[in-house]
Length: 71
Image 1 (tube, rainbow, N blue to C red):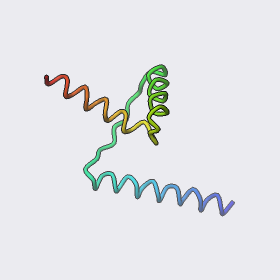
Image 2 (spheres, rainbow, N blue to C red):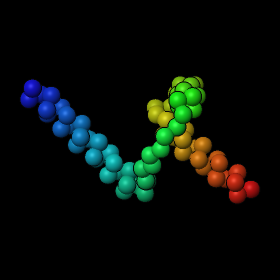
Image 3 (tube, rainbow, N blue to C red):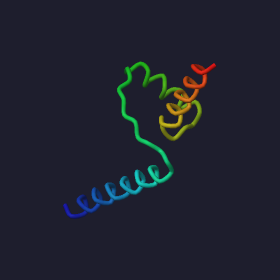
Image 4 (cartoon, one colour):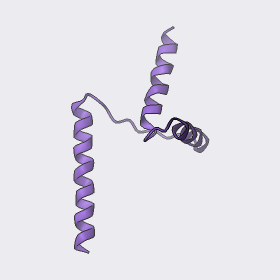
């Protein structure tokens, strides 16, 4: 039991450090709900591109949308 508590604490510590690095880099966390179909499509694109997570794809899509709305 002690090992699982230590492992959980390690995960929390590493997650907190990751969030701190992101904030220090000027990044802000955003949370939203998407349809299951949209997430499935996003995951297909993620696999095709070999991306490690959805985050860079979502950031790219938002940036693309904003740039095109200004045009």
